[in-house]
Image 1 (cartoon, one colour):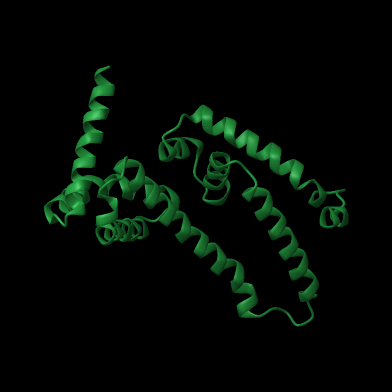
Image 2 (cartoon, helix red, strand yellow):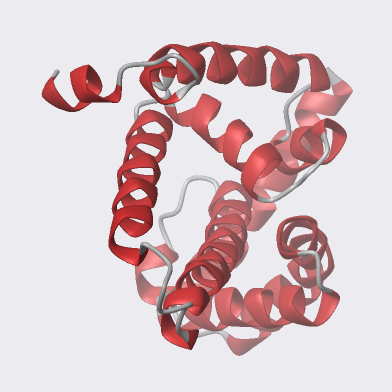
Length: 199
């Protein structure tokens, strides 16, 4: 009960700060920045794996908080909003890097003798199949899967980042892998890609 009261009191204090922020109170913004900068950097760093990049991500998030201050005054859970904003911006940064890395071979040029058209077509089909399969996962399941397989976080890091138990992470990953195995069966050895495309 004591913990519940402490959490409720903390939530009220955070909402009060956001309400002051909405009026343009710079002291409220300073208080939010000081309180949230370190934990948000830890969350972002767990995703981007680079301290300097994590700090940039969080600075951008907090700058956006100041820009959007008037619309944030009625935010029910400032804590959830800030964590979600930092996580999303960090994930977007990693996605952007992955797109750059994937496109690098094409931009840099390939061996003229390589069957480029065919290999690119197959790669594009597989990429599309994987994207569709991952996009079809339930939201929490997809989030856990991407943090593990795309961003390389350990189950413990995912649990901390999403504020869930390691057992929940394990269950969600198991579910994600089962669903993906079923949906990507045509792309696995012995699978029939033609029927996947036609179906």
